[in-house]
Amino acid sequence: MTRRLCVVALAAIILTVSFQVCLARGTYQVRQAHPRLFIEDVREPAKRCEGPLADDYRIVKQRADDAVKRGGIQFISNQWSIPDDLMNCGIAYLVERQNGRDGRPYAETIIKQWGDGTIISNREGSHFGYHAIAYDWIYDALTPQQRVQFGDALGSWLRFFTDEPRILLKWGHWEYNQTWRRPGPAWHGRKRTA
Image (cartoon, rainbow, N blue to C red; front, side):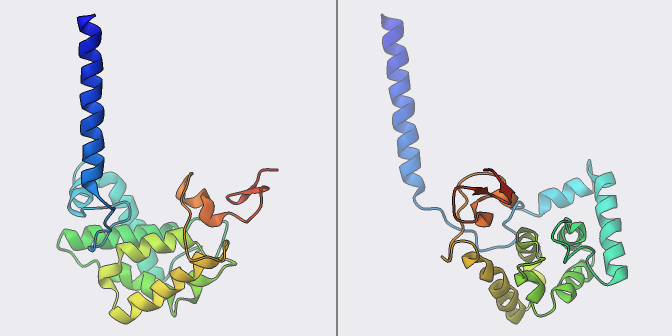
């Protein structure tokens, strides 16, 4: 009986403390600094890219270097292909810059490819999510005008499927969430379910 009372008391304390912690957090605050998508502190991945992930990063950097030499991002307009070069250049920009090397060519390759932003807002062949990640990762390399220009191009997607300016991330992977959902019960993500 004493044991049961102790367990119940402990559970009550844990629930009370947990509830108080949740209340103390308040509303979610978006970090002002970039990057903030998938990477919170560039120092950590940059350090790993010179340590245990050096072999992997060497491949990423080589592919980013190839994109810089080509002067563009492969498969950027192919809606069925993942624009690896976009991610490789974004990562190389962050890591090289953090480690004191010139990361600017990687950001410039992305910026050149984006042009006036039309490629980002193109609903027939754009990779919205990947552009949003790259935008966040190279944000510091963008001029204030480019931040607005490309930000507006990304923002054009907010009304695409729902006609409302919001993203509905209720479940699923970011590629297949409700942002991509067509209205009606027959659609979930890009795949027909009924």
